[in-house]
Image (cartoon, helix red, strand yellow):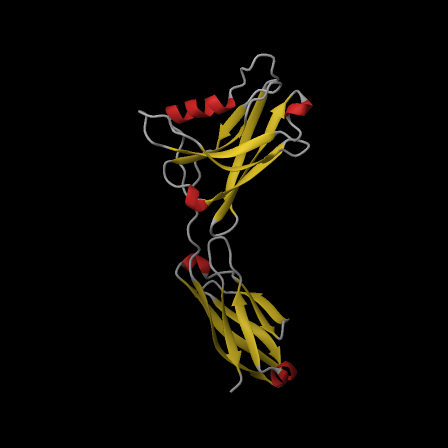
Length: 225
């Protein structure tokens, strides 16, 4: 998720207005915002937990995921509601945010508005480090050779980052069937087995390298003729 910065003092004051637990006769409530994480190129999820000694202030509790923009200390940072929902039976809460809705100077928080019987609460998400874009990776089939019934396709994985060469998972597929799997050498070399029978019956095959959190995937196709 894009890098977020901590709330300003004024931003915290705005959160307090939405989440005060001082309502007379209301059961105290606490919210813990655990983590924010991307799950696609455009969206992230933030999740946490509601706590209270009163069960009815936990189960099914209405909550909001809000975004605060850091606009300095001279004006109150007005929160924007980006998602709403109800807590699970045991009080777990989560909301989705579009990455376009956050950026430098923005902090996310899960809050439970106060009610006549339950105090409000809120907890800002700690600043998170921007996730680096996965390094580009490519697969190159160099050739095929062997002896008798045994053969091997050989090739290399290349990448923008040297850390994306070693121990990359590769597999060879034809007609939806996986023929062999393996891992790359320290410098990105790979070799995958192909029998003479498989070679005779294959028109095209694909060798792919699996993507990781830091290294993009890639593939190359071999075609007879």
